[in-house]
Length: 117
Ligand SMILES: [Zn+2]
Image: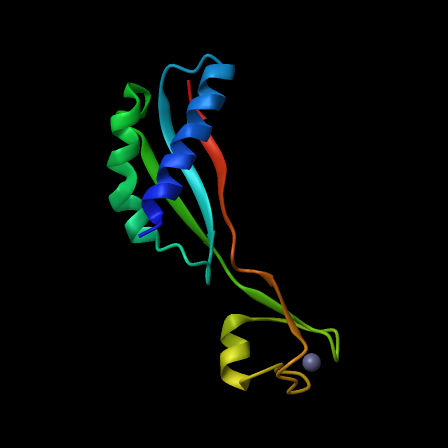
């Protein structure tokens, strides 16, 4: 379960930002996670108490997770499409290409914003 490592590295990053900005209370952390990243949002939530143990700043902090949809680009016809369209067509929905496809988004895992005082 690498989610614990992710949560702790996020906690460190947020604490760093909190220190730089003299923040005393962190209301919420919003994370963006790609639809097909290897990170499981539920596990992130479950691991979050480990971050709370690191600093009293995280007491009462809400962890929000946004899922970013995956998108693909076809290098044959130049069209882009979603994971659903890809699954349905089993390749590029426009020209049926299966090999020359590039994932544009979908594997992200980062802090989008921090609500704090
Ligand atoms: Zn195509």
